[in-house]
Length: 255
Ligand SMILES: C[S@@+](CC[C@H](N)C(=O)[O-])C[C@H]1O[C@@H](n2cnc3c(N)ncnc32)[C@H](O)[C@@H]1O
Image (cartoon, rainbow, N blue to C red; front, side):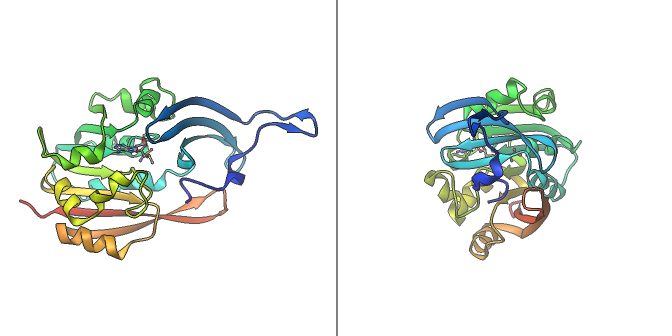
């Protein structure tokens, strides 16, 4: 896990050193209990980049770090590159630190951006402009932040407009979910339910922490056209090496 580092040695320290107080490098900006576990937002200095980083922890899992945003941005860029049309209605599943959503807004063809997140606290962080891209996100009249369960919504038939692109980044990967209730989306019937929310030829794009998964590709290709797994490499300032995520992109075969 790189975007979501599980190695506590990457996370700095606070406390006493031989009885002498050590300058606190963490600042806890928010802590809230949620149905998925305790949610913590904190800011700390990161010597590897000489800058402050923002981190989100949910239960025992590191969910997101502002140190690793290349593939989150690529999710929007690769997904929207496959979308056609001059006026795009886009849905993002999973707000997090907001990098995917803001990258989508930078595509001027996007006329409306809905971002669904299950945790009200995450939406509240942006509404309170606590995060680096919050101002750009909530200050844009095209943005709507919606509190809902993305997976539950995809199971229901669409009630309003269809989307030209759905960009999803909630789980670690198609086989490692934050919550077991998300698992059905990554099988053909769940993908077919999601497909009903797309316009004809609309794009589904998905972020994953794992390498391209042949089993998931089979499910994706059973429902969509042009299913592609893009490997996105990026510099990892903590390890000093290169890390990779995967962005899946596929197009609705409905016309
Ligand atoms: C890894 S973060 C998304 C990161 C985002 N791509 C970015 O650029 O910052 C995952 C988000 O999914 C949200 N989430 C978890 N379960 C969800 C669900 N069932 N429906 C919608 N959002 C959910 C979490 O609250 C979290 O904000």
